[in-house]
Image (cartoon, rainbow, N blue to C red; front, side):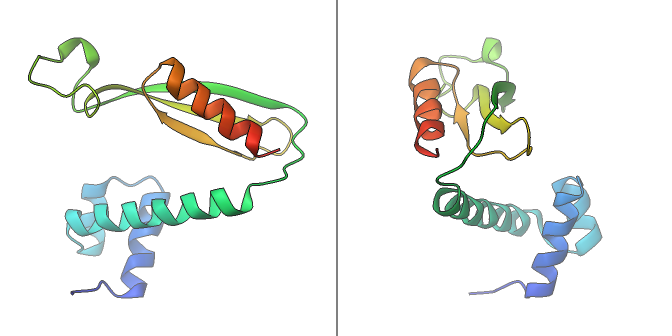
Length: 128
């Protein structure tokens, strides 16, 4: 298996954290976009593990919750019968924010429906 050197991986993640796009990161680091996306998924999974292990027994006093709209591939109104609405269309990021510390104890990405909202609030409740 071909493995990207650690220093290059750090450079790629640093560029992405600074707000560079995948394509500009590709040009700046000489790393193929597919490799960047695989690394991004790997880093995301690591962050999820840390979030689930460490973000427990929190003492947040004031938590603000909100949702942010986005879409995958195309907006919901442009979906056709050939599209899988579970994989494309409107998507929402539910986020909780401690108003005092700016800590984000949890988030959930999904459709704007009762199961997603319930899972998000259950996750938030389990962190206190």
